[in-house]
Length: 274
Image (cartoon, rainbow, N blue to C red; front, side):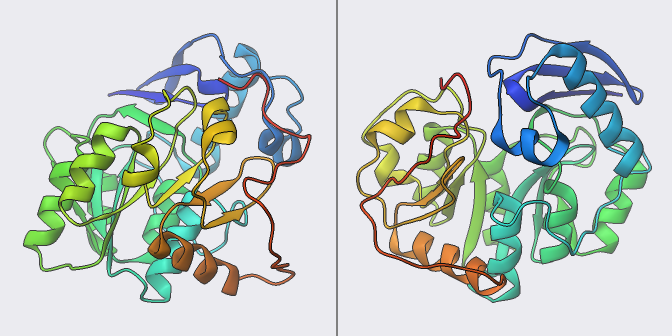
């Protein structure tokens, strides 16, 4: 069973049969989130391997022991947390996400979204694991391709529409994907965007996006409706995106709302920005 993920530092990681067999060189050397939550001050190949091995042991990443449900949040304003709140509060009625061991998954269960996506990075390739797919299905998830665990968000949106869902939010990792999903009427949430090439169409086709370690998103986005966070901010670029961010804020205490010129960043950014 082979699984490929771009993990912390946007480093390529290959896991086979539950063992980390390859770790590439990280492109980003410092991430504020991993520094805060895992004490990682410098991202190295050794730290990446240790972190992925921790995830395999802790919640069964890439194995048949994969935990699929989670009610607690990992970070206050991550992509999975925002989608979880949007589903709970009925702002959307379905999500199209990506999970290891299953590929593209369609679900309206907020806790399945958090369980599958809360502690993973960019899944590039995955292999189907029967036990995990069964757990996903038992908890209201529909796996797009149970035989090959295909990752295809556009086909996932089409399947969600066939199932009768109307207000669909989908995670996408490129402008091309965002365009195709937006043409199908989905709400697009850009994730894993470190290194994305700038285009003015970004502001047209993404409703929400996480800035990751992207230099151009921090410097060139102008039509921002709302922002959450200052270190790795998530931006809403449409009215529905803003609504979804505000719904997440309702699930948390200690929220400060103020008017600012956006983007608003602090000094504690990922390094280097790409």
